Structure formats: C-alpha cells, structure tokens
Length: 120
Image (cartoon, rainbow, N blue to C red; front, top):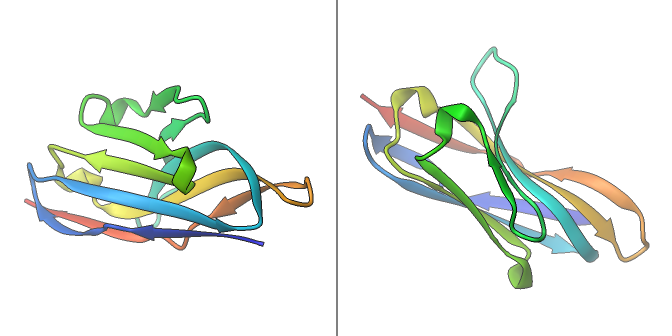
C-alpha cells in the first residue's frame, strides 16, 4: 500500500507565498507523474501542475509564472511553490501520483488534501 502525505497549507495574505509538500511512502517501486490539483467548494477538482519523473512540467494557465512544481525523486516527494497568491487561489489542494508498487501493479493515489486560504 502507498500513502501520500501533504503539508504546508495555511492562511496567507494576497501577494504572499506558501510551499506545499507531498511525500509518498509505502511499497513503492517507482513513481511516474506527480500532480497537484485543487478544489473549491461546489466546484470540480482542477489540475494545477504536473511533473514527470524526468522533470518535465505542465501548468494551468491561471498559475503560470506564479507557481513552480518540483520533485525530489530520492525522497519520493513533490513540492508546489506558490508565489504572488491571489484570493482566487483559495482551495483544498490535493497531490496525486501514479505509482508502480513492489508487486508491479500500477495505481493512482491521492493525498488527503491541505487547505490554502488567501485573504484579500
């Protein structure tokens, strides 16, 4: 079994910064793409950023130039550095990872979510 544990959310004023972390643990052979999603109440979960095992990245238009996704493969951890935060960035942020386990099965895993609140 694999677990994803997020940390780093909180309350910040507009224009401020936060750094989210998500560490994967358990019976891991390899991790493919790692992603950050966010979800506001009553809305669909949306993709914020993604990073491949080789370091290629992709961002939602709404966060380009403000957010940076990175990963430490040795620590099975993905990060989301969020700068110039806006009130519309307020949401629960979830990490997601495609993991090949030690039994060679491939599954998609989700973290429990971390709240980010940006005050105006």
